[in-house]
Image (cartoon, helix red, strand yellow):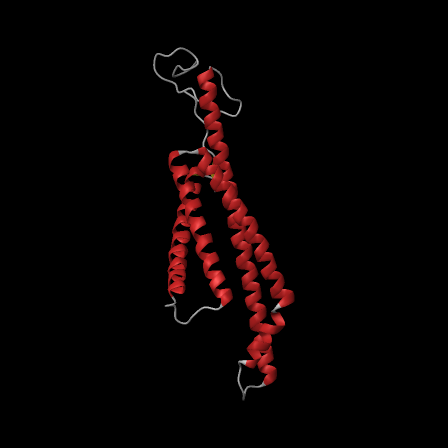
Length: 218
């Protein structure tokens, strides 16, 4: 019998377990946002949403609902693929989360750029305007600038950590795709009577067997 050595992540955890956890998290988050988004869209279409949304907010509600539904469906495919070792579903899941990660990095870079070069002055001006009368202007300016700079750093750190986890998640998914391909190649080569170069064959020793499967010294 041909056995394929299980690939690991975080030193000891099998990549299959990693894909299962990723898909489960995506299923929960995507489902939650999808349900909430479609409820908002339903109320919006009936005209019962209070307060009513602006044009941009209506567009954002539709986009959130559709994207969250896609995340839910893709994660469902990844979950099913990891449970039943379905290469096509796991491959689709790996490709989809990689595409989503690339889009997220691109949009995040734009947001970070705007924080440092675009909307900073406008946000500080709004902060100073909301401070009200009777407050020292120099103190208000200092507090608003310091708060904005701190928030900007926090946003960058959060984005960077999220990107690292996302990239590592893509790596785990593709590692499992590679493992499933090796298992498929091993099964095909066993049927043909040969062994694939990517497959580790484990000969389990048992009593009274001929070499090299015999137990004890050879």
